[in-house]
Length: 339
Image 1 (cartoon, helix red, strand yellow):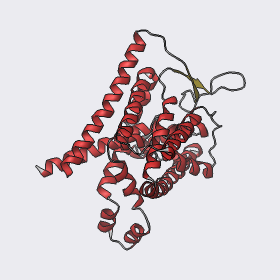
Image 2 (cartoon, rainbow, N blue to C red):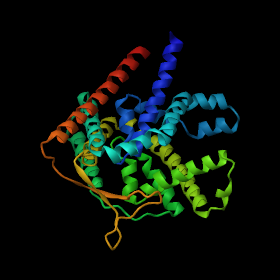
Image 3 (cartoon, rainbow, N blue to C red):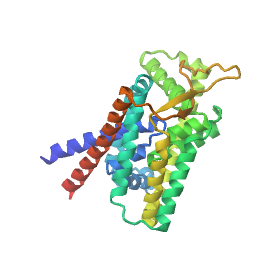
Image 4 (tube, helix red, strand yellow):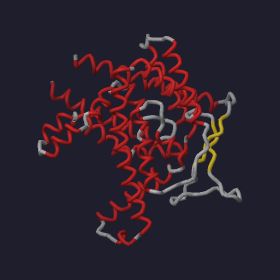
C-alpha cells in the first residue's frame, strides 16, 4: 500500500513538473502559480535554498547520498525531470494550441489565474494597511510590466546570462511571468525557440552519427547562448530561492499579499480577447525568426462581442477555474494523507 502511494506521489510530482515547465514557456503565465496552487511552493523554495555551502561541501567530499538527502534530491529531481520533459514535449503542444486555438488557450489560463487568486486569498486573514499597500504595489507592478514595449534581440553573452537570472523568477515568484519578461527584453525567440531548436537538432545529429554541426558557426553560437542562459537560470533560481525563503520566514504576510498583487496584475497579460502584435521592419513587413515564425511584439486588448465563440471562451475560463480547484483539492488531500 505504501509503495503504491509512493509511486503515485512520484508520478504526480513529475506531472507537477510538466505543468510548471509548460506554464513557464507561455508568456503571461507563471510556473510559480502552479507550485503555489498545487501546495508545494514552500517546499520548492525550501529545497532550492538548501543548495548552499554545506551542500557543495558534501558534494566535494564525495558524500553524494548525504548531498542528495540534504537538498531534498528526490523532490527536486522528479520535479525538474517533469520540467525538462515538458520543455521538449508539452510546451511544443502548447505552441501548437496557441497558434490554432489561441482564444481558448488564453481563456483557460485566465480562468486558472482567477482560481489562483481565489485560492491564495480565501485563507488570508492578515489584512491591514501594510498588506493592502503590498497588494496594490504588486498589482501595479504586474499591470505596468504587461504594457511595456519589447526591446531588440541581443545575443551578448553577459546579457543572455542576465536574461537567465531574470526569466527564472517566474518559477520562484508566482504571477511574475519569466517568458513574458523575455519578450520585453527582446530575447524570447532567441532563448526559448532558436537556441532550444539548435540543441534539439544537435542531439538528433549526434544520435545520427552526423558531427558536421561542429563546423556550423551559427549552431555553435546558439549552443553557447543556451549554455550561458541555463547557467544564468540556475544562478537565478538558487539566488531567488534564498532571498524568498528569508522573506517568507520574516515577512510572510507582506510577501503573500505582494504575490497576490502580482497575480492580479498578470490578468492583463493573459486577457483572452487580444490581438497579437508582431515585430515589423521600417517598411511594415512582419519579421520572421529562424524557424519562419512571426516574432511577438506585444498584445492589443479589446472587449469581446457576445457570440458563440465568446460563450465557448467563457466555458474555458470556467474550466481553468475548475482545474485550479482540482489542484487545490489534490494538494489538501495529499497533505492530509501525510499527516
